[in-house]
Image (tube, rainbow, N blue to C red; front, top):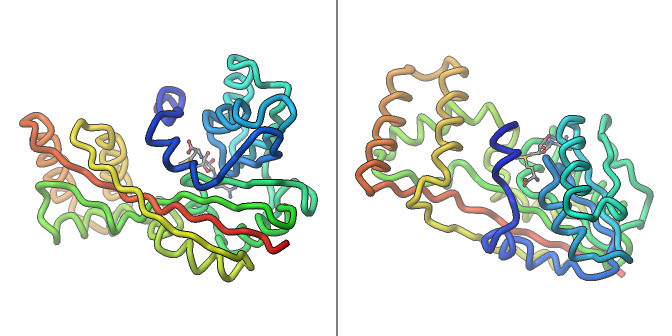
Length: 247
Ligand SMILES: C[S@@+](CC[C@H](N)C(=O)[O-])C[C@H]1O[C@@H](n2cnc3c(N)ncnc32)[C@H](O)[C@@H]1O
């Protein structure tokens, strides 16, 4: 929670990830899996007072933080939070211009059903936009291939669809979207921005009980040593996918 309170804000890298969503003034947009709502708030600024943002999450605590953030940013007049408790989206048919989900589809039980819901709530011509990572495409220097692969495999139970990135394209097509576009954004982290993620993965790996904890500790020790020595490099590619609902 504290990591979410502090991080995941809007910056140049986020802007690049959201450009394909082509959100503009007056749009009605849903931010699915909004977490603490930092993206929802930025979308609220982009759509202006004539637009609206629906911030959706299964976690009530996140929605509370999203509301606080919206008030602090002066966009609470155009932001509605929705607690999602079932498998359907709490929105009516054809009611949105855009729906976006950053690092959220990888957590749902049934990604295809979720994307069909995205399709249902979009107006004809509306755009769905999803960003997801793919843990098996992550790179961490200087960890040996086999050791890193075993580490990722053990950690992957934490996330229902840890290879969601590569699966988004076919899921968008299956859900009925047209003009599906895929790009991959892969910034190299040499400063330690992704160290928290790697440490979390270590926790998940140990919790899985499927890997010798000493192997996990070795990976973390090597990554941290590389960070201290200025040789650390982690890459976590993000798949950015958009699809249009037919007119
Ligand atoms: C990694 S966080 C991403 C938060 C936010 N999109 C961001 O980029 O900062 C994943 C979010 O998805 C939410 N989530 C997980 N499963 C969900 C579901 N089935 N329906 C809606 N939200 C879900 C989590 O509660 C969490 O807030």
